[in-house]
Amino acid sequence: MAAAGSSPLTTHVLNTGDGVPAARLALSLHRLDSSLMVWNMLSVGTTNNDGRCPGLISQEALIPGTYKLRFETGSYWAGLGQTSFYPYVEVVFSISDPDQRFHLPLLMSRFSYSTYRGS
Image (cartoon, rainbow, N blue to C red; front, side):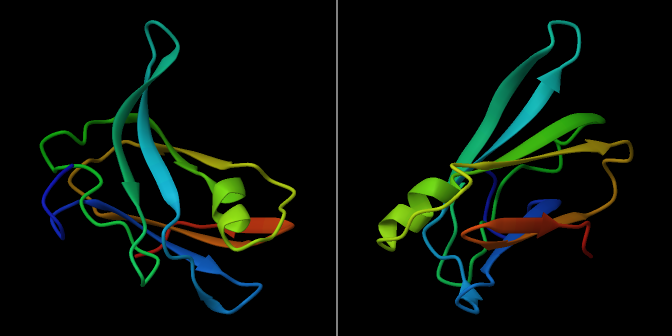
């Protein structure tokens, strides 16, 4: 992983059902190899107590392409002693200008989720 705070791609996961950050949620970042049509894992991490996962990717490694953030939501809810409809959430997105900063929040409850491109 890249050094904390230096990633041009950030995320913030919120447990909207309980109104708290989703701490200790495992996630992974992947990039699509369009010639082989396979996903290559770039990094793995776990959200901190604030629901953030710093250091996902370095500026040098961020190139134009199709990316995926996979959030292990089922394991998160199981860790809270609860069940969830979604065992995981995958958010696929495109980056055309890697000189920009990208923020991808995930708002989730046990039975729903939404995301958007933040700033």
